[in-house]
Length: 218
Ligand code: DX5
Ligand code: ZN
Image 1 (cartoon, helix red, strand yellow):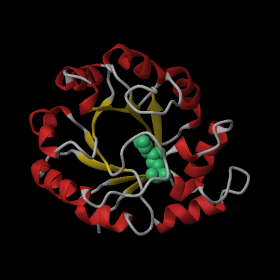
Image 2 (image 1 turned 135 degrees about the vertical axis):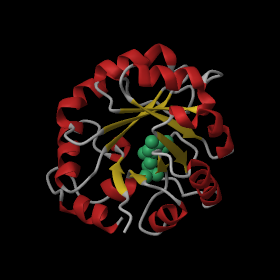
Image 3 (image 1 turned 60 degrees about the vertical axis):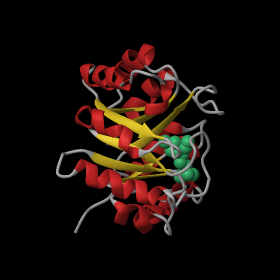
Image 4 (image 1 turned 90 degrees about the vertical axis):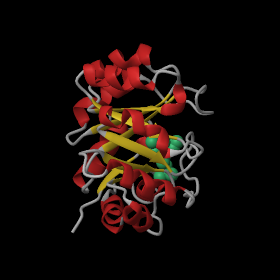
């Protein structure tokens, strides 16, 4: 049986209490922690930068998966390496030099992720797949949590799965993942599912059992 990893997105957690929120979801079975960095320019929302990610690092015992929704990316790669990101994902749409960006991420000793917006054909990943440890397929338009899963992306996930073949590259699915859409995303080829609202909607760091129930349900 194929095991699908679950990555809670702290975008839906209590922003004033990230350390405890991270420890709560890890205690409740999270496989990694998904950290959404937004710049108010590449996407119409703003979250936090490398200083916050660095402050989070000692609280993360699993894997810190940093999803950059920023443009440009290259001037900040060093700062996210220094902040302790294990996986750093950059958007294909964020600039003209994705090949250089993915090389630079690996050059800093991190795993490299390529994130793709719903309007981008997954075929653009072809020329850079061998520079990717993971491809993050967006199943919402990035910027906000709590949006509906775009089922039109299922066909794209299947095409990406076929392109990857037996190479050791994982497929992450990000946006609108809940108990209804998780099986669809996994069946299409997703290895890792990001979930924000579906996990943090019920419970809190003081009452973490609902987080565990949500993770188990997914
Ligand atoms: C969207 C972010 C997602 C978001 C997912 O821009 O990249 O990681 O937090 O949130 P939900 O699971 O609520 O769609
Ligand atoms: Zn994300």
